[in-house]
Image (cartoon, rainbow, N blue to C red; front, side, top):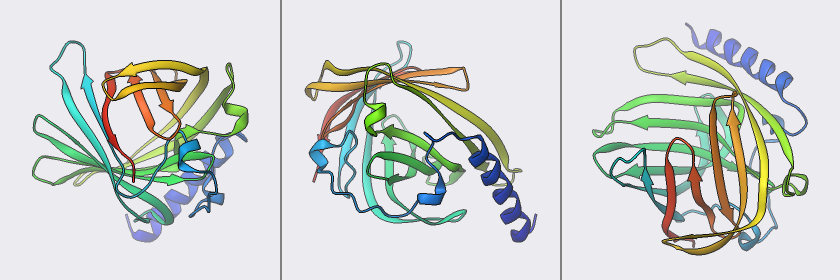
Length: 233
């Protein structure tokens, strides 16, 4: 497939994704670096270069794996997402697992993911995923910070892997706010959290707890994650 063909395919995917998204779904039309005046202490996912979060993760009785996500830079996302500005976040796990690198954009009232790469332990790229128009990480709009609030987002995942044909999957996510002041105690401390549930395409079911000024405290679903330490510049 020629570069021109790739641009045409991505354009068609973008158009279809935008048509599927409701008013609640973020779009690439308003992307780019946003000047946000909301203090980091009032954000549910405060992003800044140098910030890091460490979690204990466990999966169905398996040994605990330590996961650390660190924000390395604020830069152009690149490749099929050239022109979008995002924070480059590197996530590493103990136990001989390769890193995952994602690019996430802060839109002041939400954080969305544009791209994610997976590497093996030797640093070889395994997959490169792009999200069209984008994949929601957390929504901080006033309408979505009340108990019982529910909304749906839609996106297309385009996976590029070496020596393999591109794979395109359309997904939708149903978000529901289950609590806005639930107290959660983990190794990193005790926090008052926003609790949200996300069901992806009627299958994957996860819950997240976010604390103002800190970020994700806990995650339940395919595995359990609990915050053990964090650094915020």
